[in-house]
Amino acid sequence: MTTKTIGVLALQGDFAAHCLAVERAGGRAAEVRTAEELRVCDGLVIPGGESTTMLKLLNIEKLFEPLRRFGQTKPIYGTCAGAILLAKGVTSPAQASLQLMDIDVERNAYGRQVDSRIVSIENEGTKLEAVFIRAPIIRRVGADVKVLASYAGDPVWIEDGHHMVTTFHPELGADNVVHRKFLQLIEQRAQRPATTMRLAG
Image 1 (cartoon, rainbow, N blue to C red):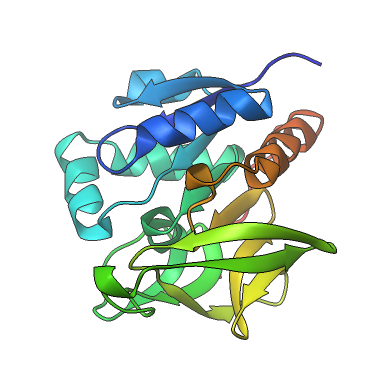
Image 2: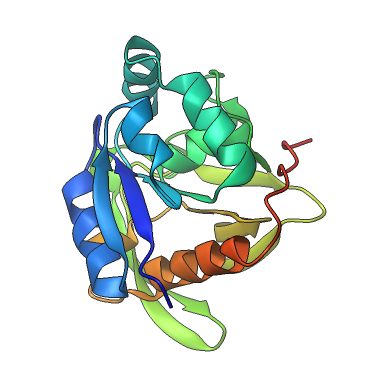
């Protein structure tokens, strides 16, 4: 199996921790700040951070449209702010997004920084640690969206086609199960014909 190059959007947020997590999971991590760097990647991680700031930086660096086009054919995994950017609908307040996944999210719905928490969630019978920091809540999932884990009745880890999001931060924990799952999605995508993915909705 060829080692895949996983880009990590390095404009803002804890992209360094994601790079380390990708390497631990068996991928080759590459920081991405330009459209040229994006083009050589097999998949992309959008880290947590502040989604409004990240959106402004994407527009300044002229990366918004290249990122949207990338997502039509290659997998993207978004964490926290990354989940907001991938969603079809964003509230509290509303803002632009890539609209690559058929989900609606409410920003900062778990509370402020002081309300951050570490909890145990379950995926396929296995417990894993989930770190929530000013996390959004996924308020709606489309009919074809697969819920991989939930917390307090809300989806916190979902898969939509070959895209994936978590509202928690697995890069801050010791378990690599989430990043390994993303590498599996990239491998599966690589084995399929290069057709364009559907856009959310």
